[in-house]
Length: 152
Image (tube, rainbow, N blue to C red; front, side, top):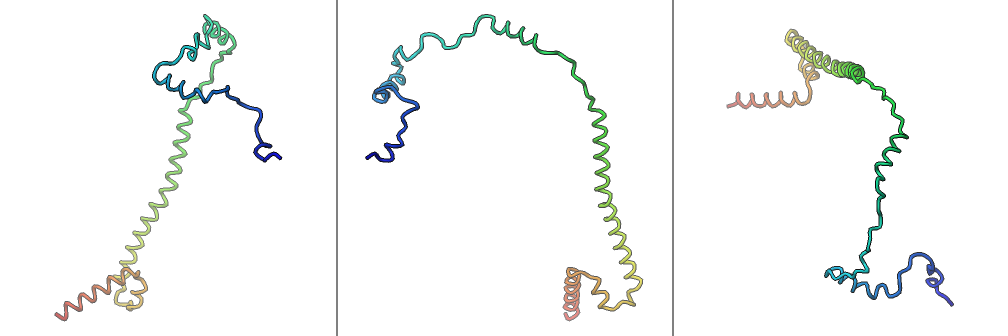
């Protein structure tokens, strides 16, 4: 009865000559030491180009090629169009940013002037509702510091 390895044995494909691996190490040593036998080096070159090969083929290739003038496209007009579009896009992106920053400054100035005019009419709670948490903490710290200075 044959095993699965014997049943699946490959019978076709690449083969090596008889006793190839027995003499392989000796041949490698000979090549390393420069004692390679002359039968390993071929006597003549394997590929030879016929005389006038490139001259004849160049003429044949040039005869087959159809020379036509290429259409020249000027990039100037395209550059102008693209730069114009880029400028418009840049302005549409930047102008709202500039407008909002100027508007924010104006709003802050209006709030400050309003508070200055109506400071005696506003209660502590109204002022506190207008301040942010960071500003409230700073105000508390100032009041504590002032109270400590008044005690001393």
